[in-house]
Amino acid sequence: MEIKMSKLGIVITDGVGFRNFVLTDFCQKAQESFTEITIFSCLPKEAYKDVEVFFKIIELPVFEEKFPTWFFRKIKEVAHLQLHKSENEGISSNLKKNESKAKSFRGYSTRLIFKISSFLNSEKWIQRFNRWQQNSFKNNTIVKEYASILKNENIDILFFTHQRPPFIAPLIYQAEKFKIKTASFIFSWDNLASKGRMSGNFNYYLVWSDLMKSELLHFYSSIVNDQIEVVGTPQFEPYVLDRYQSRNIDFINKFNMDTSLKTICFSCGDVSTSQNDVLYIDTIANAIIDKKIPEVNFLVRTSPAEDGKRFKDLLEKYPFIKWNFPKWKLLRKNHQEEWSQRVPTIEDIIDLRSILEFSDLNINMLSTMSLDFMQFNKPVINPAFGNLENGLYDDQRFLHYAHIKNVIKSNATRIVKNRQELIDSIVLYIKNPDIDLENRKQLIQLQIGKPLEGTSERIATILRKWSQEK
Image 1: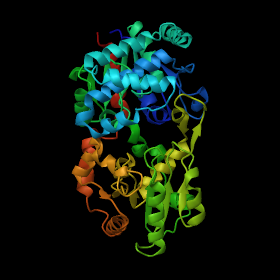
Image 2: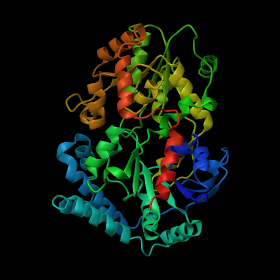
Image 3: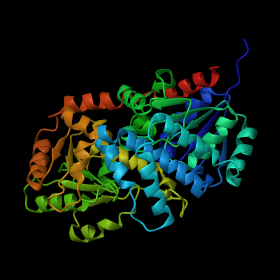
Image 4: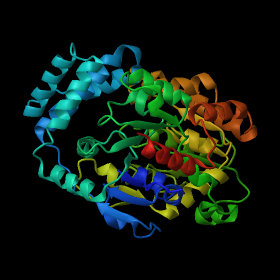
């Protein structure tokens, strides 16, 4: 029986996609499912020098968006937000963030976009804006290079590891021209219910869970059930891979911990959405000094998306705090989306896994890190002190976002709104870490619909199946 040849193209869009699909088992499992594979990398080729990837890597020329493309992408996105703003606080908030009062050409254009999209925002109009966006690529030199690359590689299916970056839209355009099947992985738990429109249309979609599948069908009415497959997420797969495992003694030595004490970890968001992190770290550190909570090891992990400079004063003020600055390398500056060019090291994945496994409690401002710690059955506290009345950065607004409402409803974490609630919850969880354990397990099942084991193999198998469909 003749085995049908099948060639996969993988678009690595950013550092998180690199972690999810290069530093997991995905490349190995994809090799078992496909006869040939090419990576189309939006990262510099040097990102791959320390990993074993045995197939072709093509570093894509960096696409720079011209005004017509920006205009149609922006109106498509704002129209999507306009369409769903009344039913969803996250989308409504995102819509406000897109407003502009700037007295510049882009500022005036943005206000025009808001006027047009306030009444032209049906799914039909959004699809029309998308077509106009795609047509804007016709005479772009870089986009013509993409055409040559895709033509030479002759792939059967092009898999995008993130659905939103604007710089992937030209690749989608060329795939459509060459009638190459496309598939995308939905990047994160909040991407559908609180973020803007995808960069384009795909033939197939991989989602984390049944919950995410229902969100996709709701927010994208042109997508049908047969285009979607629930696969879980490779984001957490390193936590069940032996090569990233370490021992408790390694963790203790790495961060200079006291073996007789329990460890609490505060994991930071990035400054754009987690501006009160300094306040929360300061509150916890003062409570430790004042003995309002039992003596503990206090470890802070900053966000991989930033350099940690905003915590400089805390380093000097509290020398007993242990710090983990994620080892992600910034490979390219002055990029349209510079955050996307930060790439994790293998050392950082090992560090993160050890922090998750050997810390006793996590505190974070409503981030995905809650799910990371829950993989190891660790209790989680989510502080949100700020509101419109008290003068702090308003992080309580996130409590109205759809994905956070699911967290609140689950009772899987303790949501705390002031200093005393934070201290009381820390004391409670240190004494009774298994409180809310069943709720945490149920939230994990809701958000991540499949076991971590075998995630890469599931994704590779589904992509192979789709590549052969007529």
